[in-house]
Length: 450
Image (cartoon, rainbow, N blue to C red):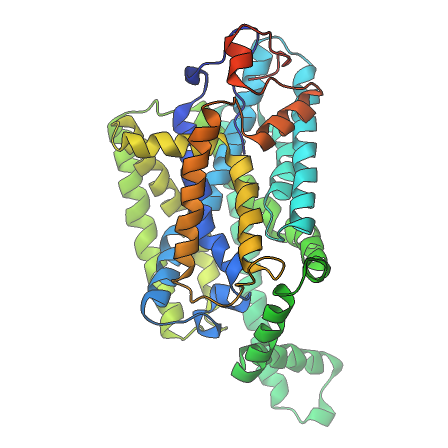
């Protein structure tokens, strides 16, 4: 998440960072809360089905639709790309300085610590953790670091293809299950085979999930648990986190982040992420991404809304999810780098860059404050707000990130969690205060420090 900063006996200066990458990272970090806030503040059923809870009309519906088209998956896509780019940046700079085997040593330790941070975050703070997935996927990225941009693009394309083949298999299985169940229902219950009985049970379970009365009972049970004390939340959170970091990790999350990571490595090596391309290039990237992605996602979202969130419509729409995520994600990338390249909105991009420099700290701080606001051991607001009212919480959290980040970095080289991560990665305490570097005090970072 956090891009290494150049250090050594010489002072660290702002130019040592790739500021365009920091801007992108800050934007992605803030944008990801537009999606995560629904998991922090609403029952799980409400994430994909506004009719389940928190309102499905007016501004509540507009917010959900806008998220589906512009933000769902796209912020995670950008964030993952930047993590991949950071892996190349770290190892390239280290190898240029002759770090040798220490490159692998610190790189692997860095990712293993991230895995541990993710586990602690997932079990003790919030189950929607992404750090564990990044750390695990990052371990495998090391072998790709030496590939040229073209081969990295091919590798990312292969993963993209595998994801879509898996999605096609999922869609087929869903409709095969329904077809089998409908056929079994035509057979008298006493004459059904064991397989037919299982098909009917699975089909009925799906229908029960859409039953308004049963769904309300399930949601109210979840609200009661989340509004409970910390130990109760911990008890409920643990099995969910375990499932995410095991089964969901292998089935979905690992591939979901690996594809954009490899793409990010390629885009960094080709100079795209460091804003080295022309203004026209970024303008075409933005226009092409939006023109391809937004109509596709708008159409599929309309189908879902018109079906009133029919559970049998949803699987079909997964077939275009990855394409829409890629297109709109690249559109966001092109637009942000175009703004950066043209030096527009300088105060905004400056603040975003500071948020990006402290991405890991801001990510964890957001989880802590959001759970304190929504969970029972804090203010207990879980399930109490309509969907559009969650935006007030989002804007408040953004304000904290945008104000605290530049203030902190006025006096310190890193965010507090970034500092701990670096120190643990190098097994050496890193200089924290800017004064300790600018005064000429030697840095304790290894040559691997990028």
